Amino acid sequence: MGFTINSYPSHWILKRMPDVVKWGSGGTPKATNKAYYDGGTIPWLIIGDLNDGIVTDSSTKITEQGLENSSAKMIPVGTLLVAMYGSIGKLGITGIECCTNQAIAFAKEMYGVTLKFMYYYMKMMKSELIARGKGGTQKNISQTVLNSLYVPVPPLNEQQQIVSHIEELFSSLDNAVETLQKTKEQLEVYRQAVLKEAFNYSEVTDIVELQSIVDDIRIGPFGTMLHKSDYIDGGIPVINPQHIKSQEIHPSTRVSISEGKAHELSSYRLRINDVIMGRRGEMGRTAAVTTIEDGWICGTGSIIVRLKPEYDAVFYSQILSSPDTVHYLEEKSTGTTMNNLNEDIVKHIPIPNITTKEQKKIKEALDAKTSVCDNIEQTVNTALAQAEAMRQSILKEAFEGKLS
Image 1 (cartoon, one colour):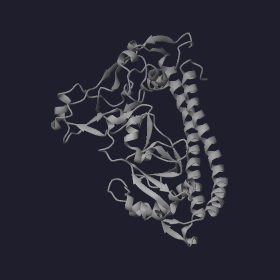
Image 2 (cartoon, rainbow, N blue to C red):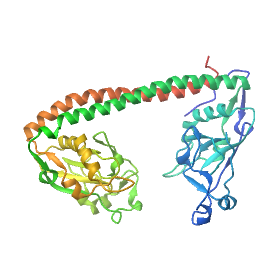
Image 3 (tube, one colour):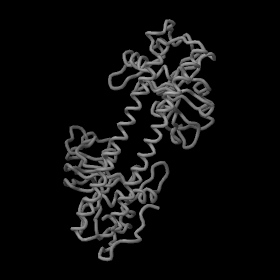
Image 4 (tube, rainbow, N blue to C red):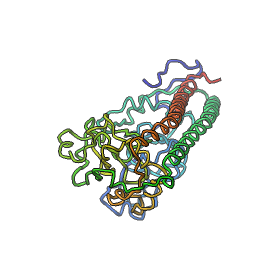
């Protein structure tokens, strides 16, 4: 479980955390008092502001009055931060004077260790901290957990050498990861080019509106029908736009409802050969419903497109995510901060009316080309996972004194 102190050079000293770092934590001004927030200029960090790097801004500011009437405390530049709730072990180093809420621990004082040395030590200990988390839907740790750790402490000159070695190796990994991420981006561009070639509407003579090839188009249940209190862990998945990625549905175990609630929402249950579309944010998120997703629930942010039996959901899901369709949806969508679709926009989407025989022919050609992309992407994802594992290996060796 995480890192175990089992070997380190004999001239290093194994110390208890309180002998190395004195931790503190912040607080939250009363949310109902507007005077604590309105017009505030003091950066007040929450866990979402931590970025595993230098923190230079906050999503929320508080006033002097808010600071004085809470347990939040001002923290100087160059302070180590550790998340204790939810995203346990997420890190940051203050690049600005700021304060935090109580979910973030900060290093008030350090004894005989450098900032970067402790930053990388805590990065290595992240999995251990997560394992010690307690609670229900949002696990958390306390300063007691932080203080229970032991830290192998080398002389200061060795600490600097260790940090230099780690950063040199991490820099090489970062370059490799950047190349892998660019490869994924290029694969997506290639996929879109393949789709555009396959579904070039200008070359198709029989263009119809989507409503002519479907039995139903339905937006997911509105907020009055599905409340936050209806969600449970491990129930019937509810599919929102963020669960639709690369023509596949990726459910969340936490975004689900009971069988009883699903029965109430039976008209929003997905069926085999439906297409589910995201109606908010990024346009063109679609996926075909298979036997796996049969009976799941279309979420508020999604739309069910129920095709007539002679039309293939996999085939038309690809059409509905093709560049031509995405361009059409972006032009027709409403909203200022976020694109939104309604049933009227969707039912008028221009679509090629292609025979079953032609659907099969085009689908086979697409599968042949996109399967190559899928294989490459799988290799890239494996390499990315290995890169992250390598980071942990580097850190473990560093804090066992094994980096040459």
